[in-house]
Amino acid sequence: MNIVLASAEVFPFAKAGGLADVSGYLPKEWAKAGHSAIVIMPKYGHIDSQKYKLEPLNITISVPIGSWVEYAQLWRAVLPGSSVPVYFLESADYFDRHGIYGDPDGFHDNDRRFIFFSRAIFETLRALDFRPDVVLSNDYHTAFAMAFLKIHYRRDEYFAHTAGVQAIHNMAFQGIYGAEHLLYLAQIGLDQFYPLSWFEFRGAVNMLKVGILFADKVTTVSPRYAMEIRYTDQGHGLQDVLNEKSADLVGILNGVDYQVWNPETDPLIYANYTAESLENKQTNKLEFLRRSKVPESELYSDMPLIGMISRLTDQKGIDLVQEIIEHLLNSYPLRFALLGSGAANYEDFFRHLSQKYYPRSLIKIGYDEEISHKIEAAADIFLMPSRFEPCGLNQMYSLKYGTVPLVRATGGLADTVQEFDPTTLQGNGFVFDNPNPHELEAALRRAIAAYYDKALWKRIIQNGMQADNSSTRSAENYIKVFEWALAKIR
Ligand code: ADP
Image 1 (tube, protein in one colour):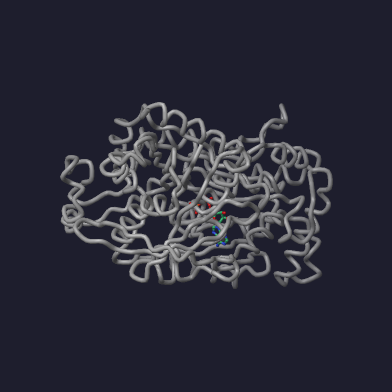
Image 2 (cartoon, helix red, strand yellow):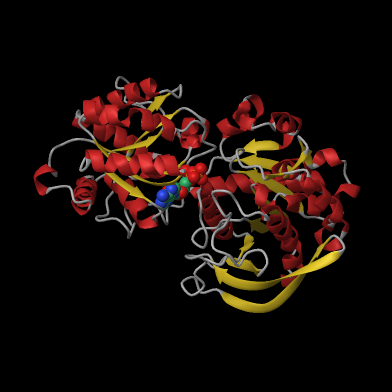
């Protein structure tokens, strides 16, 4: 099968969150399974061209936008550890800036940037002479590709048998742009073919809605989330649209790229280990604490290290942590290590916490790939108290690293973490239902009690390390959906 994955984020070139990881591993898995996969993404100004060996192709593509034409230059690299080609769209107008989205407020022209990207996908494919069976669009950034495919390109013999699949990684980000953007739609001529209601949402343009309605199949990143977005406010206003499309909506659990996230081989951690050599996990903890400047005299006092790696936003339940962390540090023997960045009020709070409770509170504000691996290897318990979580990757990394996840039962967290039952010895973590600090504390109390029962704790760790959440399985499930999409249009 010829597969194109188009994404605004692809690991390791440009990453803001889990979307990048998934966009990085899926094409590698498809290639391993014998498919022909390519990736198309923007060439942002901050991408390190030298490090990732990007090469200019001397191909200029023309991208028709309404009655005018815009241009992009193509660059090429490969996904590290594979021969999967990645094509980068260079555009001085749209992408040659620092950052992917221009967070926290977003670039003022994100709608135009991503509509341009969505259309440029097809012109790139033609220029490369890559005739796709499937275009996989990811989130709202490429959602207009589904409309361009259905409205324009399928009329063209070249794309007549190409299916469009829209993946939803997070319903909270829909790409909603105000009423004046409806005019832009008219300028680019899309509204002549389908009713405006396919593009419009509460008087504005909703890019994700466009992707959902025009795609042949729609995926989201866990089975539980596929239900939640239809039946609860997790649909963020698009519940009805998703229900209308429910026959074409499938939840596929994200996976872990075990080439990147594997304690047995990870070059970024202090000592490699397996379920049979957990003493080396202890080495990671000690070394992490030592490098975090925990005094030598305190290094060996046996208390659990609670880890967190997260965007600092309400979605991730950071407000719950904020509410209760001082109480926890005052009431329980524990250390807390957090790596994260996001809302300024949270960043300030944790900076303050780090000063007040140092060396039991170890905080790093920022984004740091290397430290994230070190925390996964060092921590005993990994905390993810998310208010909603489409899939979540860190709980699956944690399972692999023998770091026991403590999560709220929502979305992919509910699909991957089961409360440990001391009588049956089944389960791989600790789970609470309602997003309040009391339930979080109760779950933590259960976890800490289990931590001090060393035989029990080892069992929980080993249950987790046995889980197969591989990206291979996830990628196979996408192929099934692609086959359904193709059966639908052919
Ligand atoms: P989301 O995409 O909603 O942020 P996911 O759990 O799906 O959440 O994916 C988050 C990804 O981003 C993980 O790979 C995680 O390790 C990484 N990550 C988040 N914050 C940081 C950070 N501050 N430094 C390094 N990696 C981070």
